[in-house]
Amino acid sequence: MFTNRVIDGRYREKREWLTVILQMRYSVIPAIIFRVTFCGFFGCLISLLNYFNFPVTLPAKSSIVPSLVLGLLLVFRTNTAYERFWQGRQLWGKIVNTVRNFARQIWVSVEENEPADRKVKEEIIRLLVAFAIAGKLYLRRQSVNRELEGYMPKKWYEKLKTMNHPPIHIAFWISDYLQHQYERGCINPYQLTAMFKLLDRMVEALTCCEGILNTPIPLAYSIHLRQLLLIYCLSLPFQIVNEFHFWTGVVVALISFTVFGIEEIALEIENPFGYDPNDLPLDAICIAMHRNIEDLITLAPSVRHWKRTQVNLETHNF
Image (cartoon, rainbow, N blue to C red; front, side, top):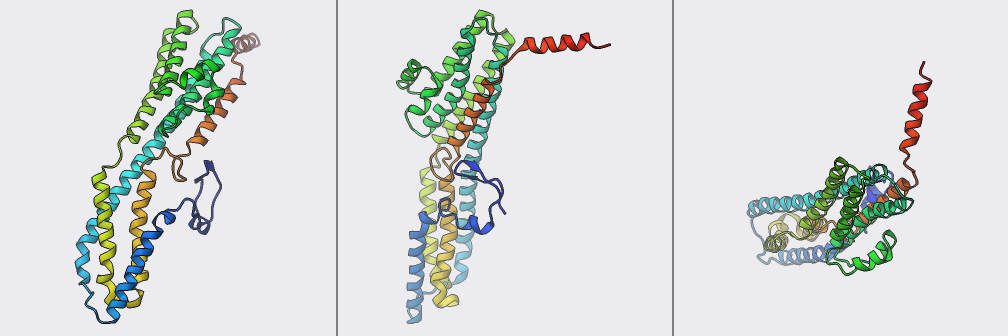
Protein backbone atom coordinates (compact mmCIF):
# COMPACT_ATOMS: atom_id res chain seq x y z
CA MET A 1 0.00 0.00 0.00
CA PHE A 2 1.14 3.52 -0.75
CA THR A 3 0.00 6.34 1.53
CA ASN A 4 -0.10 10.10 1.20
CA ARG A 5 1.35 10.30 -2.30
CA VAL A 6 1.00 13.63 -4.08
CA ILE A 7 -1.30 13.12 -7.06
CA ASP A 8 -2.29 16.18 -9.12
CA GLY A 9 -1.00 18.44 -6.34
CA ARG A 10 -3.29 16.92 -3.69
CA TYR A 11 -2.64 14.37 -0.97
CA ARG A 12 -4.89 11.37 -1.49
CA GLU A 13 -5.66 8.50 0.79
CA LYS A 14 -4.29 4.97 0.51
CA ARG A 15 -3.98 3.66 -3.02
CA GLU A 16 -3.97 -0.03 -3.92
CA TRP A 17 -0.70 -1.47 -5.15
CA LEU A 18 -2.24 -2.57 -8.46
CA THR A 19 -3.75 0.88 -9.01
CA VAL A 20 -0.32 2.47 -8.65
CA ILE A 21 1.15 0.05 -11.21
CA LEU A 22 -1.49 1.09 -13.76
CA GLN A 23 -0.81 4.83 -13.38
CA MET A 24 0.44 5.61 -16.90
CA ARG A 25 0.49 9.36 -16.45
CA TYR A 26 3.18 9.16 -13.78
CA SER A 27 5.06 6.30 -15.41
CA VAL A 28 8.13 6.52 -17.65
CA ILE A 29 6.77 3.79 -19.95
CA PRO A 30 5.56 6.22 -22.66
CA ALA A 31 9.04 7.77 -22.78
CA ILE A 32 10.95 4.49 -23.12
CA ILE A 33 8.51 2.25 -25.00
CA PHE A 34 10.19 2.80 -28.39
CA ARG A 35 13.66 1.92 -27.08
CA VAL A 36 12.38 -1.14 -25.24
CA THR A 37 10.46 -2.37 -28.29
CA PHE A 38 13.47 -1.85 -30.56
CA CYS A 39 15.76 -3.83 -28.24
CA GLY A 40 13.14 -6.57 -27.92
CA PHE A 41 12.80 -6.94 -31.69
CA PHE A 42 16.57 -6.93 -32.01
CA GLY A 43 16.70 -9.79 -29.52
CA CYS A 44 14.11 -11.68 -31.60
CA LEU A 45 16.25 -11.15 -34.70
CA ILE A 46 19.32 -12.57 -32.96
CA SER A 47 17.33 -15.60 -31.78
CA LEU A 48 16.23 -16.25 -35.38
CA LEU A 49 19.81 -16.00 -36.64
CA ASN A 50 20.89 -18.40 -33.91
CA TYR A 51 18.12 -20.81 -34.90
CA PHE A 52 19.51 -20.92 -38.44
CA ASN A 53 22.99 -21.62 -37.02
CA PHE A 54 24.55 -18.23 -37.64
CA PRO A 55 27.52 -17.54 -35.30
CA VAL A 56 25.86 -14.87 -33.13
CA THR A 57 26.81 -16.00 -29.63
CA LEU A 58 29.17 -14.47 -27.08
CA PRO A 59 30.35 -15.87 -23.73
CA ALA A 60 27.87 -14.99 -20.98
CA LYS A 61 30.71 -14.14 -18.57
CA SER A 62 31.84 -11.30 -20.84
CA SER A 63 28.97 -9.14 -19.53
CA ILE A 64 29.83 -9.36 -15.82
CA VAL A 65 32.20 -6.39 -15.62
CA PRO A 66 30.18 -4.14 -17.98
CA SER A 67 27.03 -4.95 -15.97
CA LEU A 68 28.69 -3.93 -12.71
CA VAL A 69 30.04 -0.69 -14.19
CA LEU A 70 26.68 0.17 -15.75
CA GLY A 71 24.89 -0.58 -12.49
CA LEU A 72 27.15 1.76 -10.56
CA LEU A 73 26.67 4.52 -13.13
CA LEU A 74 22.87 4.13 -12.98
CA VAL A 75 22.88 4.24 -9.18
CA PHE A 76 24.99 7.38 -9.18
CA ARG A 77 22.76 8.99 -11.83
CA THR A 78 19.54 8.22 -9.96
CA ASN A 79 20.89 9.25 -6.56
CA THR A 80 22.14 12.56 -7.96
CA ALA A 81 18.77 13.28 -9.57
CA TYR A 82 16.80 12.38 -6.44
CA GLU A 83 19.09 14.50 -4.30
CA ARG A 84 18.24 17.49 -6.51
CA PHE A 85 14.52 16.65 -6.27
CA TRP A 86 14.59 16.30 -2.48
CA GLN A 87 16.67 19.43 -2.04
CA GLY A 88 14.10 21.34 -4.11
CA ARG A 89 11.29 20.02 -1.91
CA GLN A 90 13.12 21.00 1.26
CA LEU A 91 13.74 24.50 -0.08
CA TRP A 92 10.08 24.99 -0.91
CA GLY A 93 9.16 23.68 2.52
CA LYS A 94 11.48 26.33 3.92
CA ILE A 95 9.72 29.00 1.84
CA VAL A 96 6.29 27.88 3.10
CA ASN A 97 7.41 27.84 6.72
CA THR A 98 9.08 31.25 6.43
CA VAL A 99 6.06 32.84 4.73
CA ARG A 100 3.78 31.62 7.52
CA ASN A 101 6.05 32.90 10.28
CA PHE A 102 6.72 36.17 8.46
CA ALA A 103 3.02 36.83 7.89
CA ARG A 104 2.22 36.08 11.53
CA GLN A 105 4.91 38.45 12.77
CA ILE A 106 3.81 41.29 10.49
CA TRP A 107 0.15 40.81 11.38
CA VAL A 108 0.73 40.76 15.12
CA SER A 109 3.80 42.95 15.63
CA VAL A 110 3.30 45.94 13.30
CA GLU A 111 1.19 48.50 15.13
CA GLU A 112 -1.71 50.21 13.38
CA ASN A 113 -1.60 53.91 14.24
CA GLU A 114 -3.88 55.01 11.41
CA PRO A 115 -6.99 53.45 9.81
CA ALA A 116 -5.15 52.93 6.50
CA ASP A 117 -2.44 50.87 8.19
CA ARG A 118 -4.60 47.73 8.24
CA LYS A 119 -5.09 47.77 4.46
CA VAL A 120 -1.39 48.35 3.79
CA LYS A 121 -0.51 45.52 6.15
CA GLU A 122 -2.84 43.17 4.29
CA GLU A 123 -1.22 44.16 0.99
CA ILE A 124 2.25 43.44 2.33
CA ILE A 125 1.22 40.08 3.77
CA ARG A 126 -0.25 39.10 0.41
CA LEU A 127 3.07 40.08 -1.16
CA LEU A 128 4.61 37.15 0.72
CA VAL A 129 2.46 34.78 -1.32
CA ALA A 130 3.22 36.85 -4.41
CA PHE A 131 6.93 36.26 -3.75
CA ALA A 132 6.37 32.49 -3.79
CA ILE A 133 4.24 32.64 -6.95
CA ALA A 134 6.74 34.91 -8.70
CA GLY A 135 9.50 32.49 -7.66
CA LYS A 136 7.55 29.58 -9.10
CA LEU A 137 7.07 31.41 -12.41
CA TYR A 138 10.73 32.42 -12.49
CA LEU A 139 11.90 28.84 -11.95
CA ARG A 140 9.61 27.75 -14.78
CA ARG A 141 11.04 30.41 -17.10
CA GLN A 142 7.68 32.17 -17.29
CA SER A 143 7.00 35.88 -17.30
CA VAL A 144 4.71 37.65 -14.83
CA ASN A 145 1.08 36.78 -15.58
CA ARG A 146 -2.39 37.33 -14.15
CA GLU A 147 -1.80 34.78 -11.43
CA LEU A 148 -0.04 37.61 -9.56
CA GLU A 149 -2.52 40.36 -10.37
CA GLY A 150 -4.75 39.84 -7.34
CA TYR A 151 -1.91 40.03 -4.84
CA MET A 152 -0.87 43.65 -5.33
CA PRO A 153 -2.11 47.04 -6.56
CA LYS A 154 -2.40 47.49 -10.32
CA LYS A 155 0.55 49.90 -10.42
CA TRP A 156 2.82 47.42 -8.70
CA TYR A 157 1.70 44.62 -11.00
CA GLU A 158 2.50 46.66 -14.12
CA LYS A 159 5.88 47.59 -12.65
CA LEU A 160 6.63 43.95 -11.87
CA LYS A 161 6.03 42.94 -15.49
CA THR A 162 9.04 45.03 -16.54
CA MET A 163 11.45 43.47 -14.03
CA ASN A 164 14.07 40.87 -14.97
CA HIS A 165 13.82 39.18 -11.56
CA PRO A 166 10.30 39.77 -10.14
CA PRO A 167 10.80 37.90 -6.81
CA ILE A 168 13.71 40.13 -5.83
CA HIS A 169 11.66 43.23 -6.60
CA ILE A 170 8.85 41.94 -4.38
CA ALA A 171 11.40 41.32 -1.63
CA PHE A 172 12.53 44.93 -2.04
CA TRP A 173 8.96 46.20 -1.56
CA ILE A 174 8.60 44.13 1.61
CA SER A 175 11.91 45.33 3.06
CA ASP A 176 11.05 48.92 2.17
CA TYR A 177 7.74 48.57 4.05
CA LEU A 178 9.49 47.17 7.12
CA GLN A 179 12.04 49.97 7.15
CA HIS A 180 9.25 52.53 6.84
CA GLN A 181 7.35 50.98 9.76
CA TYR A 182 10.49 51.08 11.87
CA GLU A 183 10.99 54.77 11.09
CA ARG A 184 7.36 55.40 12.09
CA GLY A 185 7.90 53.61 15.38
CA CYS A 186 5.46 50.80 14.58
CA ILE A 187 8.09 48.12 15.21
CA ASN A 188 11.18 48.08 17.38
CA PRO A 189 14.76 47.27 16.26
CA TYR A 190 14.53 43.67 17.45
CA GLN A 191 11.35 43.05 15.48
CA LEU A 192 12.87 44.69 12.40
CA THR A 193 15.95 42.47 12.63
CA ALA A 194 13.87 39.31 13.08
CA MET A 195 11.68 40.14 10.08
CA PHE A 196 14.67 40.96 7.88
CA LYS A 197 16.12 37.56 8.77
CA LEU A 198 12.92 35.88 7.63
CA LEU A 199 13.03 37.82 4.37
CA ASP A 200 16.66 36.78 3.91
CA ARG A 201 15.64 33.13 4.33
CA MET A 202 13.03 33.43 1.60
CA VAL A 203 15.52 34.97 -0.84
CA GLU A 204 18.17 32.42 0.11
CA ALA A 205 15.81 29.49 -0.51
CA LEU A 206 14.84 30.85 -3.92
CA THR A 207 18.51 31.40 -4.80
CA CYS A 208 19.28 27.78 -3.94
CA CYS A 209 16.41 26.68 -6.19
CA GLU A 210 17.98 28.72 -8.98
CA GLY A 211 21.23 26.89 -8.31
CA ILE A 212 19.50 23.55 -8.88
CA LEU A 213 17.83 24.83 -12.04
CA ASN A 214 20.96 26.37 -13.54
CA THR A 215 23.31 23.48 -12.73
CA PRO A 216 22.21 20.53 -14.86
CA ILE A 217 23.89 17.13 -14.92
CA PRO A 218 27.01 17.46 -17.13
CA LEU A 219 26.11 16.65 -20.73
CA ALA A 220 29.20 14.49 -21.22
CA TYR A 221 28.03 12.21 -18.39
CA SER A 222 24.52 11.89 -19.83
CA ILE A 223 25.82 11.16 -23.33
CA HIS A 224 28.27 8.51 -22.14
CA LEU A 225 25.68 6.81 -19.93
CA ARG A 226 23.16 6.58 -22.77
CA GLN A 227 25.78 5.23 -25.14
CA LEU A 228 26.69 2.54 -22.61
CA LEU A 229 23.02 1.68 -22.07
CA LEU A 230 22.44 1.20 -25.78
CA ILE A 231 25.60 -0.87 -26.26
CA TYR A 232 24.69 -3.04 -23.27
CA CYS A 233 21.13 -3.69 -24.41
CA LEU A 234 22.16 -4.45 -28.00
CA SER A 235 24.98 -6.78 -26.94
CA LEU A 236 22.83 -8.64 -24.43
CA PRO A 237 21.06 -10.94 -26.97
CA PHE A 238 24.38 -12.33 -28.16
CA GLN A 239 25.22 -13.40 -24.59
CA ILE A 240 21.91 -15.04 -23.62
CA VAL A 241 20.59 -16.49 -26.89
CA ASN A 242 22.06 -19.96 -26.23
CA GLU A 243 20.20 -20.13 -22.93
CA PHE A 244 16.84 -18.51 -23.76
CA HIS A 245 16.52 -19.24 -27.51
CA PHE A 246 13.19 -17.81 -28.76
CA TRP A 247 12.58 -16.13 -25.40
CA THR A 248 15.61 -13.93 -25.98
CA GLY A 249 13.55 -11.01 -27.30
CA VAL A 250 11.28 -11.02 -24.24
CA VAL A 251 14.19 -11.19 -21.79
CA VAL A 252 16.06 -8.40 -23.58
CA ALA A 253 12.91 -6.25 -23.56
CA LEU A 254 12.47 -6.75 -19.80
CA ILE A 255 16.09 -5.91 -19.03
CA SER A 256 15.95 -2.90 -21.36
CA PHE A 257 12.77 -1.76 -19.63
CA THR A 258 14.61 -1.88 -16.30
CA VAL A 259 17.77 0.01 -17.24
CA PHE A 260 16.13 2.54 -19.57
CA GLY A 261 13.41 3.14 -16.98
CA ILE A 262 15.91 3.91 -14.22
CA GLU A 263 17.73 6.37 -16.47
CA GLU A 264 14.46 8.02 -17.52
CA ILE A 265 13.31 8.39 -13.90
CA ALA A 266 16.50 10.28 -13.15
CA LEU A 267 15.83 12.53 -16.13
CA GLU A 268 12.26 13.16 -14.93
CA ILE A 269 13.12 14.28 -11.41
CA GLU A 270 16.44 16.11 -11.85
CA ASN A 271 14.61 19.40 -12.54
CA PRO A 272 11.72 19.36 -10.04
CA PHE A 273 10.24 22.79 -10.76
CA GLY A 274 8.44 22.19 -14.07
CA TYR A 275 5.00 20.97 -15.12
CA ASP A 276 5.74 17.25 -15.49
CA PRO A 277 3.52 14.92 -13.43
CA ASN A 278 6.49 13.86 -11.29
CA ASP A 279 7.67 17.41 -10.57
CA LEU A 280 7.00 19.20 -7.30
CA PRO A 281 3.36 20.38 -6.92
CA LEU A 282 4.33 24.06 -6.78
CA ASP A 283 0.85 25.23 -7.81
CA ALA A 284 -0.71 23.35 -4.90
CA ILE A 285 1.95 24.67 -2.51
CA CYS A 286 1.22 28.26 -3.54
CA ILE A 287 -2.54 27.70 -3.20
CA ALA A 288 -1.99 26.36 0.33
CA MET A 289 0.03 29.46 1.23
CA HIS A 290 -2.71 31.69 -0.17
CA ARG A 291 -5.32 29.98 2.00
CA ASN A 292 -3.11 30.25 5.08
CA ILE A 293 -2.61 33.97 4.55
CA GLU A 294 -6.29 34.68 3.88
CA ASP A 295 -7.22 32.79 7.05
CA LEU A 296 -4.67 34.82 9.00
CA ILE A 297 -6.06 38.10 7.72
CA THR A 298 -9.51 37.20 9.10
CA LEU A 299 -8.03 37.10 12.61
CA ALA A 300 -7.94 40.62 14.03
CA PRO A 301 -4.92 40.95 16.34
CA SER A 302 -5.83 42.70 19.57
CA VAL A 303 -3.16 43.03 22.23
CA ARG A 304 -5.56 45.12 24.31
CA HIS A 305 -7.99 42.21 24.46
CA TRP A 306 -5.38 39.98 26.06
CA LYS A 307 -4.30 42.75 28.41
CA ARG A 308 -7.91 43.21 29.55
CA THR A 309 -8.25 39.47 30.01
CA GLN A 310 -5.12 39.38 32.14
CA VAL A 311 -6.35 42.30 34.26
CA ASN A 312 -9.71 40.60 34.83
CA LEU A 313 -7.99 37.39 35.86
CA GLU A 314 -5.75 39.23 38.30
CA THR A 315 -8.77 41.11 39.70
CA HIS A 316 -10.68 37.89 40.38
CA ASN A 317 -7.65 36.06 41.74
CA PHE A 318 -8.38 35.78 45.45
